Image 1: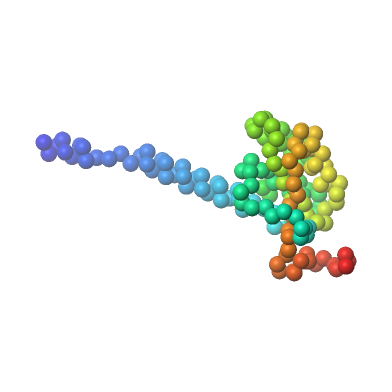
Image 2: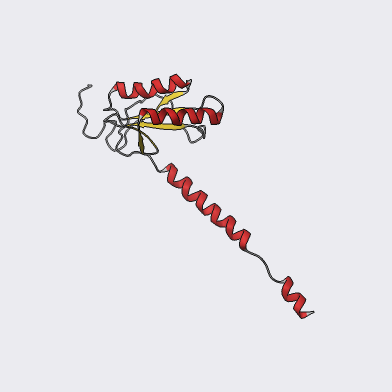
Length: 151
């Protein structure tokens, strides 16, 4: 009898440990993806634009255009051809349109932003928004290093 009780008291923890490791990996990857925003991009002011809340569509893709016209997603630079492939892949995965947000530096040339818009529209994406800042707290509505040439 004592032998039988010892066998029953044994508990296999391997599946539980596997689940814990999977959760840890998931949270590490998720947190890392949310932090991949290019800090060198200074956004344009838009004091009267709508406020974006955290309730945005989880399918939303944020495309960044820096001041030199380089395109990136999650801080990974890419060519226009690579961007097109990524957008086509997402189009196929979501069976149609998904929201796109263009996060462009205020110093970037319009032709660079326009090229991203052209790629999106050629695929059939029409839900394109632009990210801007309502008010810069540190500079009281002005960009760092920007001349007061608009007043």
